[in-house]
Image 1 (cartoon, rainbow, N blue to C red):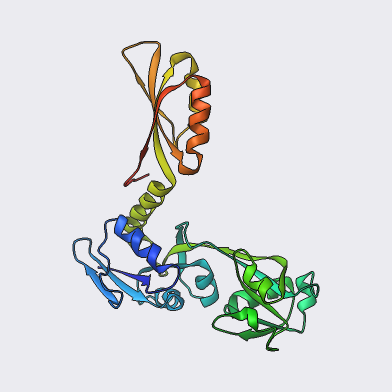
Image 2 (tube, helix red, strand yellow; image 1 turned 30 degrees about the vertical axis):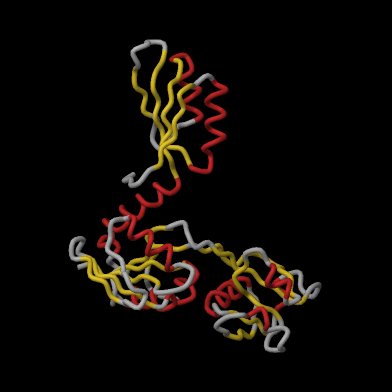
Length: 279
């Protein structure tokens, strides 16, 4: 039975659980449940603290897990990343008092507060910058104001929280992180069915099906607009001057692709959602 770790709380948990449900797996009914057996799919799910997942998987205690790339790297676990699941996006940046820093080299010998000490240490060590790391569990933006640190390294979305604390972003991006499917060393193949299902959910979320009628003399131009993943499907119609075309299109491009096809001369353009997929 495959043993899989799932975040029990935090920003990754809700989406991870929903993704598994869409992939056809049993999920917990009560947020207090920490263990779910899916006998039909031969999988055991363990709901764990997000920070612990990479450690459990890396040690081989569990076969696979869903966790953030940031947490995987910070754990220094031996777990390997199998697939980017494309949710839970976060960006890590340095920030300090407004106008004080312009490059990370200026951090040398100073104190940097962060909730991800190993991630930050490895990044700065690669850049040849030595600092004193101050580990905090959260709200690191207050560390400078309270005199605990000279700068911080934290997750940044809009930057409003940092600005409210009198800080400004400087230096390069430490990491662009998303949720990943990870596996224990040597057990990557055990998660192949899980991987296919999760990939199917990602495709179903990111793509739609385009169906439209197209004049035969415009097929090449239409196919260039909707190339699909491998190739569009082209079927004959009763009128030999027209064909029916079907292709996958990214959801973010629906209206622009419809406009382009209509301007080209395609008609009866229909868009359908995808509920499940195997690519």
